[in-house]
Image 1 (spheres, rainbow, N blue to C red):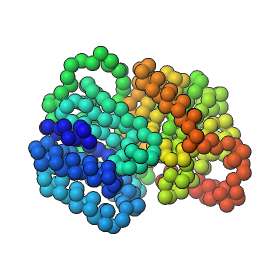
Image 2: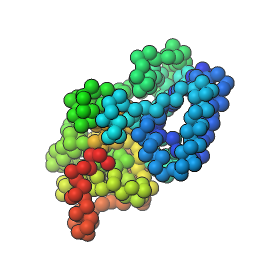
Image 3: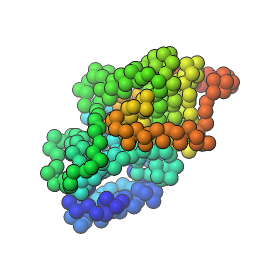
Image 4: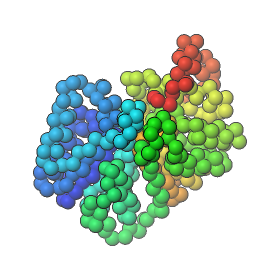
Length: 361
């Protein structure tokens, strides 16, 4: 909110969805105020993500949210509801999942949070503040989501004086919806380089792989890499959300289809009772990736995603502290092999029936 209030020239913000709660209302109010004082505001919201969020809003709340977005447009702001060009992609819930915020001041915020009380009051999240040349990469990625090759205001970014604590990082971003396949997500021809990069790093793991995801239901390439690493004796720790976090139990069912195999391989599964929405992968305490990519099929072939990766020791220390805190958190329930073996017949049957369609939830 401080960044929006202090913006003088432009403000860019992309999110999966905005909730009509105190956080969403304050954000949209401040964007409207900024636009009216002459700040060029650009807001990108995912159409599918907003539809999902709308299913738990009242009709009145959805109407008020639309009215506020229309008011921002009338004031001259750019509001884009991201939707893939391919009709099949739109039908099966493809979209954009990258969360970026930046202004001409030269600072950017990048991470996992959406504009909702769930992100700021309930779920675990992880975002970083950035400054320097990487902000221009984020700007270009933002305009790529708009379908534009022209990055407005790029020359207006204030990079400021060189920082003494520069951190070497790589920025990985990919939008599978740009694949020209006639059948969209049903017939993707291109392999997601983000997925390939994560799978390769996991296959190179020697000692530990620790990861967080909203729900752990990885695409085949990542599942195979995790399985191979676990078979070699690499210690695997998965932190994701408990079944009670969402109104729908379906995402947890999709994740639970992996539990029997994971428990047999000795993978430690932790379910957070108030929600794990961060996306962090820490390998051998020497390499870390974080951003918007959940370990799920949707991140691989339906959503535009982005991750930052680094071997910088300061960020590695931060990641180590996060995983240490998660391991000690009483809200993280460990799913044991005994618990999986004692599942009632009805749950076993539901999970077995769900397995062929899990990639869509």
